[in-house]
Image (cartoon, rainbow, N blue to C red):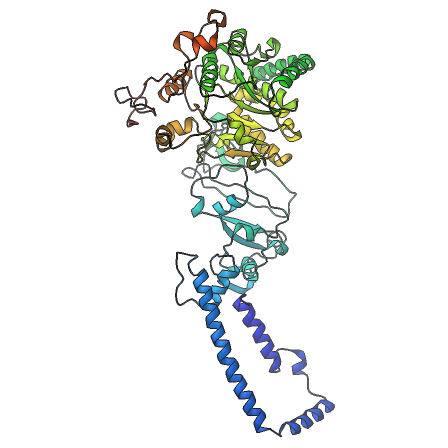
Length: 611
């Protein structure tokens, strides 16, 4: 057996000590008279020695010794041959047999050699009521073993996770690991599978200093306290909210988790007028809800495919982006039979129906949304459109339909439902495109609210009802992405909502993050080495930039003479307005394009040409 040498040696020493009459109370007890006489008689009998027996014992001892030695060397050589290249490609020729055996026993991990005090426990009696041991695990190994749904940050292969055990019974079965975890000395390193083999439950906390350049962060783990599922944030601040400022001379006090290193709180509380605005919308919503549900369900029953629909919403200002999506999707051979558009005005409704798309329009429900396009990300119009997105998703989800919600600035290359309906991706309630933005207010998911898939179940219904009631927060933040991520975290903890963000490091669902930040990926896409399911042209300042970038990338199929015109003036919109081939135009030489745009102006100062 190849176990812990220290443990085995101690056991052998203890047995030897007992044989020698040391280390036990019985060995120190004076012999009785009967015992002394019996010992004397045995000694007399043992003085008669048979020479033949002695020779036989010696011969067999020598043979056993050499047989054992040969077998040991054979086993050691075999282990070295089969397992000697598991770490750094080779095994040192001077490794002992015990080290090789340990490798085999530990499922091809590093040899189990830990320096421990042997007597002093890692955690004192004042901590041992909730902390008894500690191991480290490679972060990538942990994420590969357990899909937490959050995107894995860079550098995971080179960084470790600390696993804290509340009780001894939760520690790994391997004695050398559990002993090293419990006693002072090296923190043992092991695999995620072994580290969690006896964990009946596992609480996971994601920790990162939001701004290590400006603040020094401490983490307090409070054991023995009433179980909590949120993290309290304390910071040395003077001032409140947007007027807050970090000051190291100030006392620590509770603050918002969205407070950045400078002390600015990015969480904006809704003012009275925004609360009243949301209350008015909710009053209208509940007044017409019964009829809305009946009319909507009748449409969904007709168009749903495999109980799934594509949900979109649009106003007049972004209607050309909707038209382009329909034109490009049909040019690439996709059916749009299960697409349902929630227009916020009659202009957009007529265009969508002219394109052959199903629509659901409620003037009462959408009258709060302006017709104009938002001038920039996060303005008042943008916030109003964001609540419209929540309303349409909530209604469809609550009626029991699975849905793919998407913004209008998207192009399909493959059918997204092939991904979400596959058996491989059936384990989560919701899938989100990775936004790519790692601001504190989007932690821990960084989910993009412009492209996501939702399975209708009790967990997701509770989430979107909560979103409906948080309209005042959406108006204040001027973004439903921030509020949605806050609620995703809460409901993941509260109801066990299973949320998966499709990492920006994967190539299946790229976005404006890749367009602006990943030139290497865009070159692969231009060469045809990458064919994603879709492309989402977010991370843009406004509609004009979206259109310019999509034209450069061969994603634009809408003819210019159809932009901004009413449906009635266009006749057959699909024939009059949709191009069979992409309409490619250069705008900027430093932005990705499928043709060289070297003679075009520069968009970002100092940025090199894409080609």
